[in-house]
Figure 1: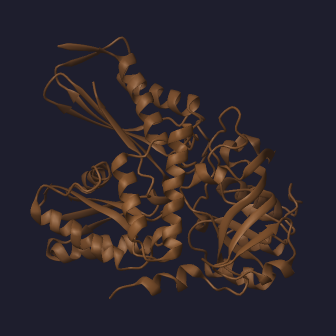
Figure 2: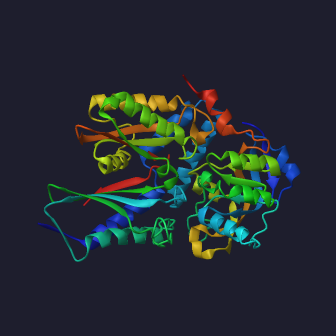
Figure 3: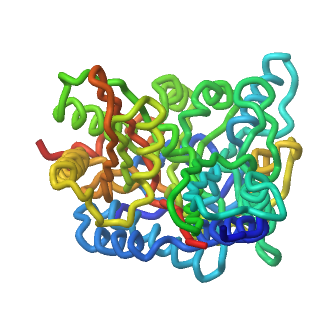
Amino acid sequence: MEKVIRIKTPVTTKEIKKLRAKDNVLLTGEIYTARDAAHKRLIGLLKEGKRLPIDLNGHFIYYVGPAPAKPGYASGPAGPTTSYRMDPYTPQLLKLGLKGMIGKGTRSKEVIAAMKEYGAVYLAAVGGAAALISKSIKKVDVVCYEDLGAEAIHRFYVEDFPAIVVIDSEGNNLYETEPPKYRLE
Amino acid sequence: MREIKAEVIKDTVRDLFLDANYFIGKDLYNKLKEQSEVEESPVGKSVLEQIIKNNEIAAEEKIAICQDTGMAVVFIELGQEVLIVDGDFNEAVNQGVREAYTEGYLRKSVVNDPVFDRINTKDNTPAVTHIKIAPGNRVKITVTAKGFGSENMSSIKMLKPADGVEGVKNFVVKTAVAAGPNPCPPIIVGVGIGGTMEMAAVLSKRALLRPMGEPNKDPRYAQLETEILQEINKSGIGPAGLGGRTTALSVNIEYFPTHIAGLPVAVNICCHAARHAEKVI
């Protein structure tokens, strides 16, 4: 395994630029959740020239719609959703200072170009490992869009949330570099 | 006639969805273990170990394996000598889904209208149901909680009869490989061949319900399953798409007679959290 790097949120561009594809990271601090419907609303506000209800500067967005928490649990199962659906919205959020996204699966050329331009990383958490991942989520608050249920924007307080750098701020992309190493003709 | 109360249908559907969402099948669990032992990629191996650990936590604590607890799909084989009494059959199925998803801390992921409103129905209904009348006086209910990360990577194509076995193979492999890391590999590939367009799609979903390691009864189709599986695993996509030998765990084909002019092929992709359960009443 590659090295493990501990990251505390919020982060600076300088810290983000040190991360390399294949680094394992353990995130601690606050992260925001948003997926399809919340992204649509955020971008809607930007189009109208309005302020966003969350300050993304230096922050991470986790693409997740958690399952409900059982009594006594801080969070329900909460693994990543597939990221490409957020691609049309992501460059605009990176422009506002968003420093990282956590999800699973491929990203568009436009997203990767914006990550390089503004200095941001894309982390993957293991899709379908929702019960395991939820153990690192210590506190959950709904920030806004409560009417969206699981799709509301939540603030997670996480401790040692495990993820891997899949695309770094230079555009190195594990989804492109790793499979060929195991490809058979 | 054998009378079965609608409430029994409801309770069975509820219990099956809870079961499917908390407990991964023993067959799948064992297959994941087997693959984690042989996976050559260190990252791939670590991903498989996390998946196994996740499934153990979910079963132990009775919490959902994956936060996407899916759209509820229910296959019913209704014996023709069964009379459903004291309630509406379809409503009983939906009430079972409603109770499982609201009482079982499962995510409600269904919106009322696909294009315009997209308002969450808040109880994960309606279910997608496939009902078949069968001989006898029993009711067999099979449920699957189908996540959409993998559903979105599925595809259907009306091939030409001339495309033949190679055409089928190419289309299935291309669909699975193009999905890359998105459907949460290692995946299970359900393939429906023949019938009409919608029949092929339903067959591909049904194929996903087959126990792990059980090939098609027709040796020619069993051979095709093996060849397609090998081809997909040559891609190197690996667990979570981070490189490795384990891209697909199984390819399951179901087929049906078709028209002289056609060769429909549907590919339904399922993530490693293939959640299904069944019971005969």
